[in-house]
Length: 244
Image (tube, rainbow, N blue to C red; front, side, top):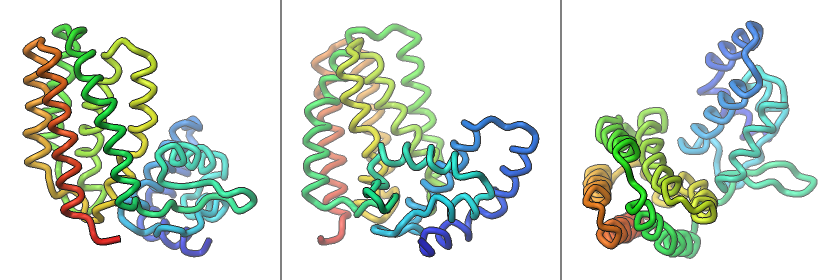
């Protein structure tokens, strides 16, 4: 519990005080929950909250100068990503880092779902939807990629938004839900390598290739481009990852 508290305090006291003042001006609960979520996610991604550490609801609330309610809501969201786990009678703990087996299973699932998403989305694309995808690729290209989470957060968000948009454009609620179940794990898998963003140039080129394939209107080409991207992500991550 102490580790969780100190892990947050170093990077969040000033922003927590700001949030408390904002709360006094009537900021709604969702804004507070979003703020807590971002602070906790940054602490997880930067390694200030280590695998296995307890995350105290009351301690986190004190560190961020908020009530326990937005902390509970933020932790529930993080549980969906797999970054934290709720243990019966013990509260929340930081999840262990992906093992190679975990990672292999995640990538196997992504290969089963995302190429199909690209194929289905390709058949339904219109100029507005294509423009939205182009915007995410442009955001990916311009996003900073520094060593800390604060510096590469926008990059990860653009990456996730690209894949999420494709899932949303399949027209299949079950495929979208299947991707949603996986999408939450993507940030956790970033900790598998433990080295932040090292493959940006390759990943950006692959996203552009998927976009170009979607633009052709050829579902088979879009499916193949997405499969190629996922396979290359898998290969790079395994090469960068430390031994178990």
